[in-house]
Image (tube, rainbow, N blue to C red; front, side, top):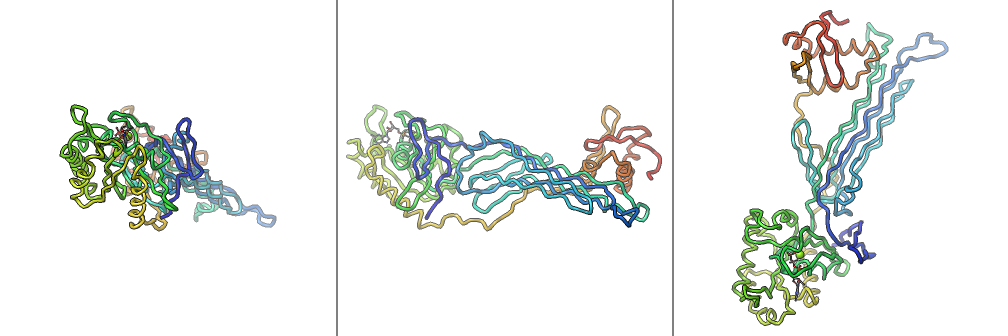
Length: 461
Ligand SMILES: Nc1nc2c(ncn2[C@@H]2O[C@H](COP(=O)(O)OP(=O)(O)OP(=O)(O)O)[C@@H](O)[C@H]2O)c(=O)[nH]1
Ligand SMILES: [Mg+2]
């Protein structure tokens, strides 16, 4: 199993990143970004001019589409760190249409790389939506570029041979996105606080988390890349779990979601756990704590309790722990899992453990890449032509409706013919009739999108 190693490296003070690209340190798992797709280019309202054709017909081309914004899984990334610096992304506007029916150029798309396991959330028309970008090959169309405006070639009719009308480009979509990384580590380290999880990740990878002789030292998950021969795998060290963790007691709860997707759990047991007097606790007490953690996992997520576990009895260098380690192993091994006896502090027994983990992971197929999948926001957009009419407190009227709002945003009101077009659409769509029934009067203001129209009872042209 060859796994790409992190492309970034952020070493703690005094440490350096290795050439293997092994990273260390804290890991950033939430970000908020703003994505703004490109507006469409404007349509053109021009007329053909040729030597022998005195009155050429309309030849204004359409505007180009604005650039889309995509979020794409990049397996070389495993943090959201870059979004601390870079929060705003915008794509290019489409080019305007030209003469001689020339189509404007489409705006360039922007593809933003995110690590596998990124959950993306936003609000669309008041509805919360969520997309889970789990594997390589997945690409979300996060913000759609605006359509190009139509050029005047589209507006000829029997009555109108020389239309001086062209649409503006449609505005591109813009959203604020919340990104959350659900870390996809191969191996999750679980156990009571102070069991030695951070000491172990420091021993087997270049990660340098804080280690201290008191519980709840680790406040944020740490990632480490473990190299075994040509293979490597990612280990996540999370804050210790305690009784009630599944209900949110302690710190571990918030981080259990990080181990939800790991393929293997390493359950670190402190074989030198002190009892109330500071002596090494007896075997029954240690075994009871081991079961307690498993119960918490099952209560949090039954599937997590089913996940294969490798048990590690740690702190073998402490004489009292070594003395009862074999009995402890037998008491725990009843469940049929592999049990390793190690000292995370001295490194004793650690190579056998990592070799076993690599072999176990190699034996399991890594999650397959999705064949290039383009994902759209999971939202029912409903009827485009539906509209509603609001009587505002200040005496004005407001019309809401996706189709009509889009048309208004693409209308160049400097062109008188555009105004006639809007009047015709308001009649044909039933909006004018609905306004009349609602009691609109001559001279009233009707707001649609960013435009304010003045109502007239005269028939449209
Ligand atoms: N003697 C000995 N001490 C160890 C060993 N592993 C860890 N320790 C000590 O145990 C204490 C806790 O170690 P950590 O690695 O911080 O434990 P943790 O499981 O990450 O703890 P939390 O982050 O609080 O959940 C520290 O004082 C370590 O030095 C070991 O193999 N032998
Ligand atoms: Mg720790």
